[in-house]
Image (cartoon, rainbow, N blue to C red; front, side, top):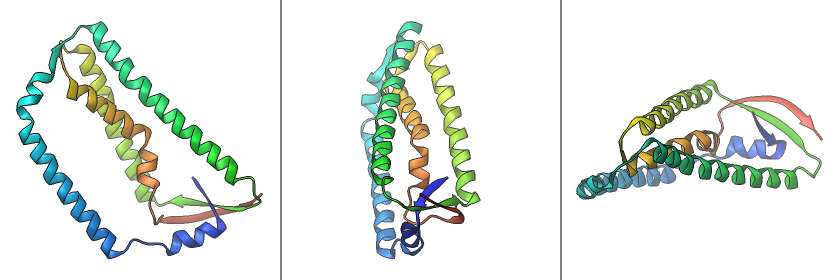
Length: 170
């Protein structure tokens, strides 16, 4: 559940993205996908040199070196957010719980399951393979990062669809 002040609730219901912003997002997405394809084609020969032979100990070390920095990064971000919330919550306020719609909940669960399976399969693959690729390790990092920050990606929107829960005042 997301806590929202009563004054902010009116802003959430009235703010929406304009057609120009949506057009800019679509243009940026098209440009990004085109650049990604161009980079993939031009760097094909370079990626062949990123393979290296490993043992089980090196693979475990790679896993530790990929997971620990991500967890510490997530811890620092959460700690900063908690400190910001403590500063804001010193005033007397009324809170409303905005429950997200079922669509966002199902979407969140689906993405979590898919990326969790990808993460587990990637870890199992990294531990069992004799030849590892740097891109494989980067893929593990990106998958873990999506799992850790999926709530920020899915719920940080300008318009929240859902129903209003109960009101609390402090």
